[in-house]
Figure 1 (cartoon, rainbow, N blue to C red):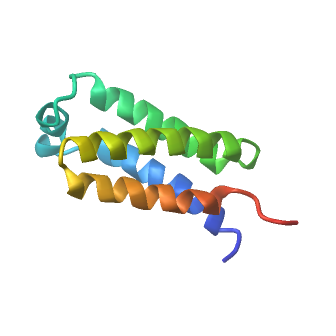
Figure 2: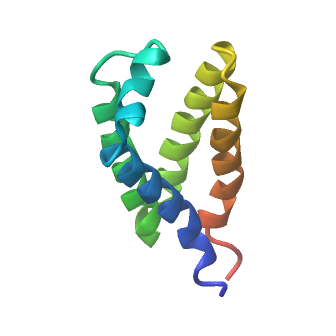
Figure 3: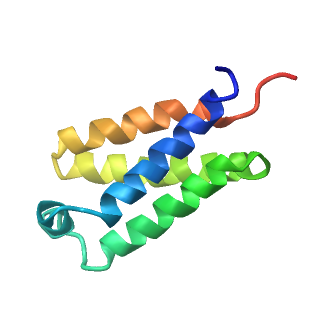
Length: 106
């Protein structure tokens, strides 16, 4: 059980990347509704997959936590500024899971 906890954030980011990659038609029009450009979804998929891979590898977990925390903070702030509170809550919950990926005392 303990060995699975550090992989939870990696699974969350990989799942989010897959959800963006195989989005429904509603999911494909969502970035435009939020005022984002057409390349926003592709960039989001790339960053989510890269972050998931960084968080999955033990050697790169600290870098993954850094990238993930910056990205999710930007997402949360952008959603809060656009009054999309229901989109900001998952971003804040993912930020709360990031300490699980960091190594504990040996």
